[in-house]
Figure 1: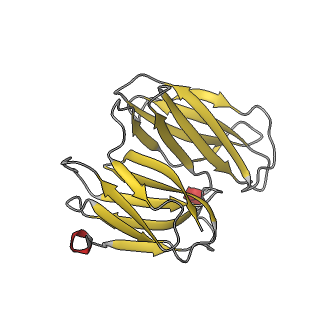
Figure 2: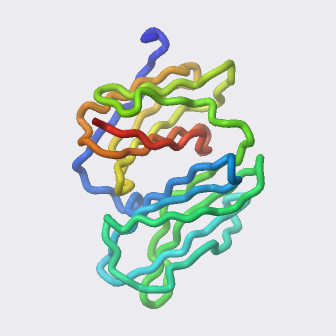
Length: 204
């Protein structure tokens, strides 16, 4: 198994503060059974009260409002929200957050997530779950991966604690997680800016 493993880039920082671009971390996962994109995100306060808008797009250029929090408030890193967006199968959707101040002016945006609503279950599986030391990610079958494999691990507040990159020819990846605190995390795999897997795991 280990001869197929290649580490290109690895970063772990469970105790560092998130950069400005990561204050509003947006995650997305497609639920095949209900044909819904399940979104969740964390919020953190600026100096002034803020509110947010969840935006969606079919091409990553023209955006429309999906939902807005009408109340301006002091969010904290513990404020976590979720939304279920009913979508069509086998199409690509983009999502991002717009953060507004008390004057209804845009002060920042979250990351953009692109997700393909495939009617085929994810080819990626992870094990063991719960995990102690090493989380293994495997791409099943003979699927050709086109593009660099990007893996991030986020804690319950949406902070990125691990970044990992690997060449597309490798279908078995092993992520050391022994330094993470106990708790629930999300591992996300993306290729060519498209999320191909988004799954929770438990670190023991």
